[in-house]
Structure formats: structure tokens, C-alpha cells
Amino acid sequence: MNPPSDRLEYLATDTPCFNYCLWPYEPRLPVAGKFAGVNLLYQSFAAAGIDPRAYDLVNRIRAGIGPFRTVFGIKWVAGRLSWEFYFYDYARREREVSISRVLDVIRPLAPCGIRVNENLPYFMFSLDIDDALVTGARDLDVIHMYVGNPGSTVSSGIAYAVKAAATTLENFYFFFDAQTQLADARDKIACSARLDATQFDVDRILHPEFRACRTICVANKQAADTVYFSEVDVDQLLAFLRLLDYPASTIRFVENNRGMLDHLRYDVGLDYVAENSENGPEIRMVKGGFYGVF
Image (cartoon, rainbow, N blue to C red):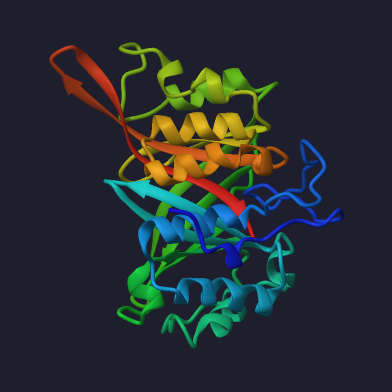
């Protein structure tokens, strides 16, 4: 299913391009007249049949904090689409894009009763988006807050789940240059309490077809480990969508509009677990996510 034609957005000559960390990049091709990345988000809304108020949420956020300041993640787990919106401000305590500001912007559509200490040195936060949220069936009940990891020898972050009752640890993230630190990324993947790297080839996780990218991020989460590949091209995005078995309509949309999407760089991530089978240890992909900016 395609997004409504009146929802499709196009880029101008001077439109900036950002990856999922809101780091700028040079587009692969001239951008004028090509699809904006948000069209992928709109296609996923159409594929999932989400309430139209999801579009209103996007518009409200852009009006409240400005365009190209929000990263969207399109998640695919257990045959279901969901979304996460990410907000960055690397000024930390001197930030302009704060949790409080975004909560005020979205409150008419997504009320939230969480009080946040804005003195905390977070540089990023994210919100889970689904049909229940935009229709008012649930309030926003968790904010994912990311802080730095001083002392780490690579770019690193720590995520916490902030709820009304408590703040709990969620995930650790470590970023590696894909061209100069590939061995370090491999070692990080292998250093896990969840899998025995002597029993399988790490390339089953560190997929060679995605390594032509800018950074590789390895995350340790509560229920799985994750690897992210940043700034892949549209053909690598298609390979990722097929690998994770995303909805057929999403894959067709990218295939049919490849020439309108080949100027952008994309970011993809996959969550995996190790399981025992009759044939020995197996790696199972349990979740996928790909990212863009609006």
C-alpha cells in the first residue's frame, strides 16, 4: 500500500541530509525533486493502517521544533509495524530540543504525566509511537533517555527508561568506524554473555553486504543484542528489508521508487539472539528497524 499522493513530500536543492544520529552527510546524488525520507514513514503508516492522527503528530512535531530535527525509526517485530521518534540536542544542559518542550508540543495528541529533570545531561531521547497512542487509547508512559559514557574509547551511550514510578537501565551503545574499526566491532559482537562466538561465524551478524557504510553500532539490550549500519544506500536498504521480511508493500514501494530514493543514505538495525537447535547454535533475527529524518 502506498501513502496518499497528497502526503508525498519532495526535496529542494538546498535541503539538508542527516543520518539517524542527526549527523549531516552529503547526498549520493542531487536531491532536488526527489522523495523526502519521510515518505518511507508515511508508507509504513499506510501499510499498518494507523489512524490518520499519526500524520498530525508528525506535523505538530515539525511545527513545534522545526523540520529535519526528528529521527523516525520504522520497527518490524513479530509481523507488526511500530515506530519510535528520536530527538537529539548535543548541547545537553544547554539544549533547545528538550523532553519538556517536545511533550508540550505533542500533549494535545499524546498526553504524558512523566516529570523530567532537565538538569540531567542527556543528549537524546525517544518516544514509542503506535496506533493506541495517536488515538488516545493510551498515554505516553515511558521516555527513553540517552546519556554519554565518559571514559569509553569509542563513541558510546547509555539508555534509560524514564517512567513516572522509576528510571531503569535499558541499553548500551558503542559506535565504530566501519572502515577503520571493523575488527573492534567484530570483537564487541563476540564479547557477549548471550552467545558463544566460537560456535558460529560472526559474519552472520556483521553482515558483509551492509559494511559499506559510515559507522557500525553494537548495542547490548535487555532481551537481545543489536547491530546497526549507518548510511547505507538504497540497494542495501532493500537487502535489509528482504532479510528481515518487512511487509511486501514496503519492499515494493522502495523497489518501485528506487530512482526517487537513491539520493539518500539510510540507517538499519537488527536485533538478534542465539538459540540452540538440532544443527547447533542458530542466530535468529527478532527485530528490525530502519531510520530517516523529518
